[in-house]
Image 1 (cartoon, chains in turn green, red):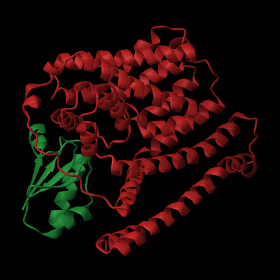
Image 2 (image 1 turned 180 degrees about the horizontal axis):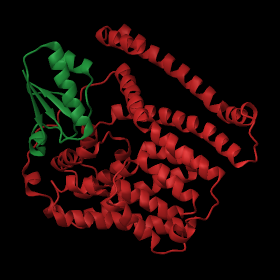
Image 3 (image 1 turned 90 degrees about the vertical axis):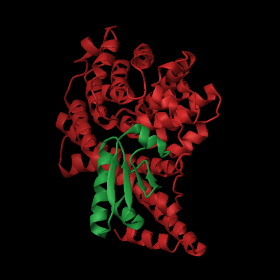
Image 4 (image 1 turned 180 degrees about the vertical axis):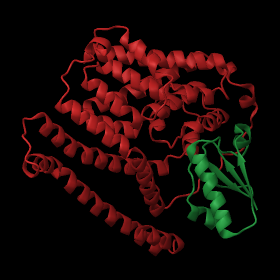
Length: 75
Length: 359
């Protein structure tokens, strides 16, 4: 499973990354988590608001940091 | 807590339409009860503050200290209650007006109409400062004119619902309304002017080369989801700004009770013509959000600074912040950034002088 957390580095983007990492650790699933900060890369996914979370190419949330409950339901 | 557990149950049983309707009904009932309680408390605040300061503490209603305490006890819950209500309502609105929706809504609108709509949407769209660049790219790739995009980018940070509540609570509805109307006007006019200048060549080349695919579709929200989203933004925002509110009101209370008016009139009053440009220039390198700047605004006004000068300062702090320019530099060439600052700056100056002239 490949998880991308998109965001240049504002507080909410940091929070999104942290939540995703915690949820993955809690669920114990095998997933690679990558933080994407390059705007060009973010735009290619059709994402125009940050933070955003993409799991295996599927956009799960745009424009807000997800809750841990949300992330766990996607894993 | 029990509330959010229940919501989750509702979501899991959503496929059955009857349950979904029950979920909405439940939220409607909770909402109406909450609103009634809200109004009940709000309408008694003035009486409570009088009773608290003058009967319970036995303070003298004509003394400095008595007036200050009454002001604080009345204003703090008032502003917090307003904040909760407004942030909740804006949260509900925001669950409809997503960035992707805004993008497709603005695409293909005529320029003048587009400027006005973009500025108004800028007020309610969820927007954190680091979203400025992705948003800009999103608008460009949707074929939205540069000027309309700027109207949005100016209005989004400048006119802010928290600032509106604080201005209303601390300075009255006239100032709040003026701030709203002037903020929208600057965004519309500045965006329109920038659009007329045909500056497309000054957007960084890589932005023009991006062929973004379809916008990622927004996850459809149910009504319980919207309520939950609005509640979580109330928790998030109130949790962050309540300190500023209390501090601001405490400063206001002291000023209200003690400080003689006219202290700052010499430097920041409407007599000094240079005070408006000076406050704009001072505002640019400062960076704070709307909630942080309003207590300062109130303190300045209380000491006799002119309203136009103070509003100009506040608007330049919020709309022309240096860090945001650094972020925008990723997509805009330096010349366009300079023009952007000049056009928005002129708008803010005009507002400053206008207010000083009429108030």
